[in-house]
Length: 303
Image (cartoon, rainbow, N blue to C red; front, side, top):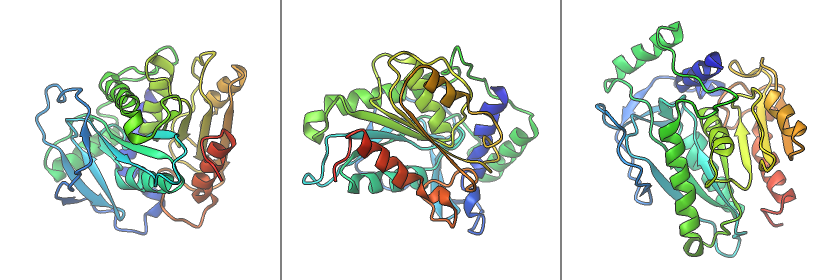
């Protein structure tokens, strides 16, 4: 599991590898206006020194050094609203967040289908403020010079206390404002990408109050975990050529099956890691339609 956590962290720089033909340079940008973002009230990141910063890479935008967690609503047309909601956790190795490809783009697409979506910008591990130093820190991480703490089957949330707290606050906020946002509080799920998938699993397996109605694990680690008897339906999507998790076993899927809980698993031949909402010539692009079809099967979407 230590290698799994390290690999997820490494994905901070490789998150958009499927579109390597695009510009892979990290170009600093101004922090975008986020007028709809709601602070979650979980406090500032303890001991934070580097301020929040954003950059562009692979035609998408990323945040790092997030010190204050926020939740941004993307609400559907009331005429299409189904009452279902989903909290979206972008990936980035707990060092960055793929805010566009695995956050906003996912949210807009789901909102068009009638789902109320809430993009979670959770607090991150600190990285050097200057871009060259950040890139060097990532190089050192790749070399194994710094290895983060690891979650285990008995403690899936190891090292993720702050991020889990942010997610619990997000669920509480959505349910507290359910009547305003036209959300059924019993139909609030979560989907995460890479590190966001790890966070999704940690919240699902270790919290009582959050209790997602359904979950999506998109190219996250699939090591076996202890599955509770009331585990929610789970959707899983992964590419067989994913350099981080494609070569591992699928113990998490087997554990869900053994617990007799609903699980749907899509293993795509090609797609690499971090395909998200990027348009590609691989069948992994179909994960989103598969996910919405799965939501419809579970009656979270209408025709």
